[in-house]
Length: 310
Figure 1: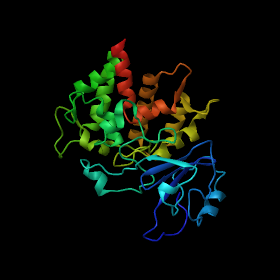
Figure 2: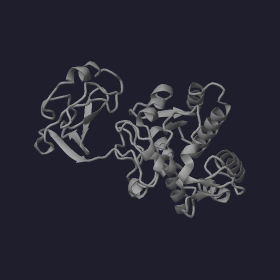
Figure 3: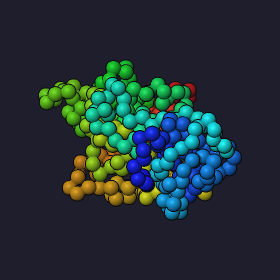
Figure 4: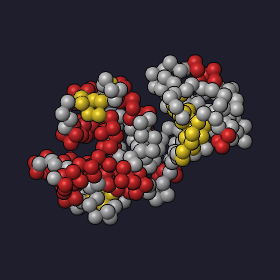
């Protein structure tokens, strides 16, 4: 939520990421974080407080993300804060649709599946950097493109599911569901592909209704929507980490259903059943971080590498 009136053209725009207190400030591509503990809004990090009343008025909200706009001091003269590079990217050069339909920069991230716990997305094995030319939705399906030619064949999907430890029956059933649903919508013309191949460049066309809306219609990642589905339908453990049981995931599908959208509801059921079978948590709770890894595809590579080592 953005507060305040329009700033002067010379003013620098900052976004405050907050929960019950201000935890970090993103400004001009940099993140400012407290050097010790946590702190509330203070003059050490801002030259003006024209929107302070709006912020403090909403401080008791359980979770607010990217919500403040302010004029900031020179980053090199900040006291009590440390900075590190951070970027919110909304377009990818080789995905034209992300340029044709730009979103509000503070809400969507096209290349990284970011959360408050993972402000830089998946950094293990340089995953985010290696996939910087793809949207998060494209990253989600990239694992199944075995030869990395931008096209996913039914055989590649079957091979991918087998690498993820699914049995032959489930893998064959998944190939039928996925390619019958996404092959035509991702093809380049009106003539269906007789080989039922999926083109990653057009995978955003396969976004269905009755979902969590974590992906936007261009394939970007919406952090607010992602975290909302856990706060709405999941539970928070004693360690503060959010999670979701299988029953709660079914409640999510039911709660997000759209009128007469049978296809979207069935697609949501297939996705969450597959996700639970893939994660198979010992305590029955799918952790938010693991689900985030499924959304950006990094968890697929993690499972595959573990299987190879074993």
